[in-house]
Image 1 (cartoon, rainbow, N blue to C red):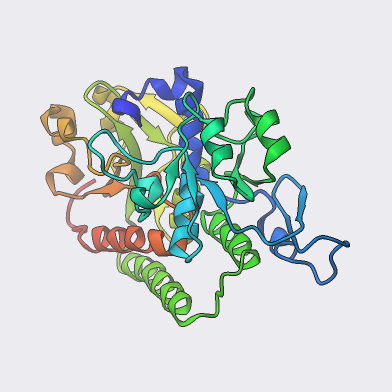
Image 2 (image 1 turned 90 degrees about the vertical axis):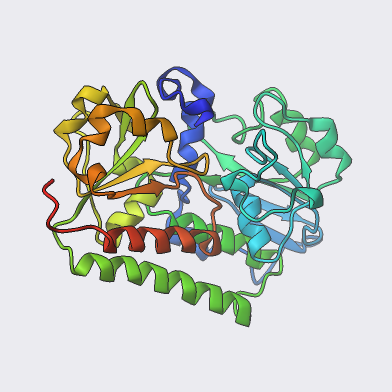
Length: 342
């Protein structure tokens, strides 16, 4: 969240749409998995084919080798062993640290192509990519997220594109599945020992969340984004990671009158919610330190008890990167004291 100015979620289209990154799920869901990858019979002169979430079948005369991708997708492909040559979208911060959405990508090994306002088409074409992978948003139907509408027609004439949809009605694992579908079509072996081990670690972390909740069946959580001036309470039905946490058994409080993704409240109103656990937007890497000086925040029972955990609202779209997020959530749930009055 740029400079943690939450009002931007309502007034700035680019930032508001950026929040949709946390919804990263595939619009076609599991039905699309049967279509992904290389079909058994391809048209003449076609060696690679993939049906994306726009319903478009991309056919290329050879399997793509030089991939450019939106940073959360690029990070997931990186973890799967399919390293992109170029990345667009959030990448590095002002201090040089890699943005959470870019995961474990080494900035020295890829070319960054910019954000919505700075996307560099010439630099992209100089990379001679075989394929570009991005997010297709219904709010901006004629492009992919972080590619300006006036540039996309020129780009798509030169470079085949894959678009993944983002829907709020499925958990984040749906996007993980779709990125894996693409990775398999690009030659990644999901039966490898390394992937099987990483998949098992993910499943174990998910089970740990459910097991931690088993001893705390009445535990409630509230997800918020906040700065010193205002609080935005998240509507969990709009965030695919929160929806996944719900699937694992976590009861996340839904705001009374959300405006889509959020309900804005003042710090004086935060007391109307009394969760056992606060999940605080930490997409910058940490919980905003200025919250410590807000009296109404500090007076909340859960806060006084230290029952506050980071909510990593942006992340790479892959199981390996999401595993530590689940592990930290399980740890936070286990630390909740049932004796604390909420």
